[in-house]
Image (cartoon, rainbow, N blue to C red; front, side):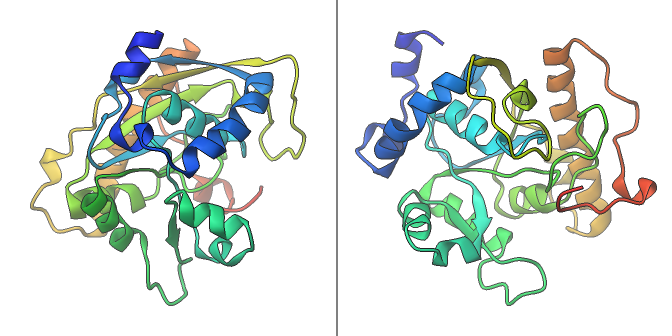
Length: 253
């Protein structure tokens, strides 16, 4: 995007002084050493109002890449983070001040589950990044795997648009499951934003497992199509399903 385009897309939440200005000052210089992010169709990210941004996920450095891209596109990046992180000194303060959304793990007392957290987005007109896969993809060729239903549950409950986004190249900075970061020379990372996913076919339907799974499949198809365009390749006909390969859905593999 050109400088004038960036200025036109500066949302009120980015224009106002906030903790994000400090975080950007700290994070952008080292990020510039590691990566050169090229954004395509950045104008498709909503400039105001609530939204859910749904990316693919194949490197543990993906949130930094997506966060930088969202900032460059004129919005403040927010993620749903594990509630326990908010009790960690300094980190918890930064998460709270930057508007990150605490979410309890499944199986705990869920005082702030993803659906309830989605209501915060509507009330404040904010956006959030939710990874539909829930973990790094298990697909051996780094294609998106079968998605989880959390993002569409939040979207359909609160009528929040889901904007798909795909990126390619982050594994050159930090390989999947690696703890090693390649700082220099900067690696090219391509990012492509899609049109909001049309979920109108699911409006009014009960949010049971069948409806949520069907809607999630639509979202994953859109993300995969964006990635196909970035890679210039065709994805497998059927998304990788960890359960069919004796793999866990979450955690390091």
